[in-house]
Each structure stands twice: as C-alpha cells, then as structure tokens.
Amino acid sequence: MTDSTPPIASFTHRHLLGIEGLSPVEIELLLDRSESYVEQNRQADKKKSVLRGRTIINLFFESSTRTRTSFELAGKRLGGDVINMSVSTSAVKKGETLIDTAMTLNAMHPDVLVVRHADSGAVKLLSEKVNCAVINAGDGAHEHPTQALLDALTIRRRKGRLGGLQVAICGDIAHSRVARSNIHLLNTMGARVRLIAPRTLIPVQAERLGCEVFHSMADGLVDCDIVMMLRLQTERMKGNYFPSIREYFRFFGLDYDKLSRAKPDALIMHPGPMNRGVEIDSELADDIERSAIREQVEMGVAVRMACLEIMAGNLPDPWQRND
Ligand code: CP
Image (cartoon, rainbow, N blue to C red):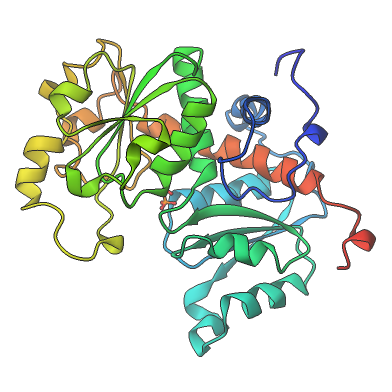
C-alpha cells in the first residue's frame, strides 16, 4: 500500500457485482489492499482475525475450482466462518427458486454471500433480496469481477503499471464474463485492449466496448505486452462456431510461432480452466519464462481476501440492516 492509498471505508459499494462502474481510484484501492495480502499468504502463519465473527457463504450454481477454493481460503485466512453450500445436494434440486434459496440463507444472518450463477443478472437480482453483501463470482457471460482484479494485480506486479499497456484478449470473447470484466477494468485503467477471435466468437458491437477487433492472431498480437487466452466455453454455445478443434488451434491457438509477433517480454495469461492443445500450446502454458498462469491463481487468494475484507467492512450495523 502507498501513503496515498485511500482508507478501505472509501469504497462505498454495498455489493461487488461487476467492474463496470468502478472508478480508477476504487480499482487501485482493491489492488493495493490485495497487494498487502500477497506477502502474508507466503508466510507460514497465514491467519488474521479481520473477519472474526463474520460468516461467508459460498453459493455456486456452476462448477468452479479456482474461484470457490480461493474464496474459501481467503475467508478462513481472515478468520471468518466459511460455509460452502453444495447446490447439487441442496433444496434447489427439489425445485426451490434462486430467490427463495437466497432468502433462506439470508435468514441465517450471513455477512457476505459469494455467488456464481449461469444466468447473466442473476447475482444482481439476488443482491436485491438480501441484507448482506454479495460478491459476484461469475454470472453467465456478464461479469467475473474478482478474476479481472486478480489479472490486473498479476499484470501490475509484473509490468509495474496497467496504463499504456497493449493487451490482447484472444479466443471465445462472445461467451466470456472474464473478457467483459477485463475490458472494463483495463479501459478504466488506461490500457489499450485488442480482441482477437473468429467472427463467430466476437460479441456484436464489440467496438462499442472500446476495443480494437482482429480476426488474425498474426495481426492482432503485434507488439502486445500481455496476451490473455480464453477457453472455448462450449457450455454456453448453441450451434457450431468453428469447423473443428484442429482448425481452431491452427488459426487461434497460441503457440511459440504466433507469440513471436508480440513483444519479446510479452506475458501470457489464462484464467483457467485451460484446454491444452485447443486455445494454448501445452509447452507454452508451462513455460515459466513466459506464462503467468500459476501466479494468477496465487493472486486470486489475495484479491479475494481484500474483497471480503472491504465488503464485510462496509456492512451497516446488523440492527440497521433489518437482519
Ligand atoms: N477462472 C475461473 O473462474 O476458474 P474456476 O471456474 O475454476 O473458478
């Protein structure tokens, strides 16, 4: 944290539903707070009592490895009580609606609900029905704010800044909440964003997002500082978007040859889960000289600690929030 970092109380949002709408100062505040947890997570004793007495419920309606685990670790390392609600064994399977599930959990007085849902907008809807803070852990193809924050922290640590960098986001942008949150964050922080994908995987009116659009890796990667790869999100696809996996990798899979168009020190990133040999060459993904993929996972815990601390710290007194 720098001397000029504003206090966490200056982050006044009740919920963290997306990056869109956050100011550069608010993003810096979240990143600075996250930075302070990176070193703590590398110590033998990782525990703090910042969230002592607080309850965090992870409510994931879609599968997750990184996000769910890191929110659980983050909550526990800050001394909070963390519950992982398993949707597959919950009353959701008996037909309980999203709202009824949320109201039921709300009646147990949690302080933070961390929610992932397959439908864009579902997390916002839920946030309007509860008294606690809600953090969006990914809603449909809409936003995944903590992923963009951990990506930004990784970039800032490696490159020393976000402003002025040329970032390429490549692959299935049309179905990607990670891409959307990153575009908002990078544009807000003064980076320049290129989207590289086949025409079928670029969202309509992509230029309105403030990005340059390319349909060729050879053209789009020229002089890039950061190359972010995205997997094909087949779970959200209806129909055929490309002729075959083999063809997709040939034209849009990142390998050493295509990467040679970017800057010599260009950093490779991927939010995971990765599909090796589809959007990224396996050897390149593991190349510690070029790839920051494992570092992204590490930064994820620090970012989620900062988000939990800030959102829990923003809650009004329980008596004033009608718990
Ligand atoms: N990047 C990401 O959201 O990964 P998980 O689906 O494993 O949480």
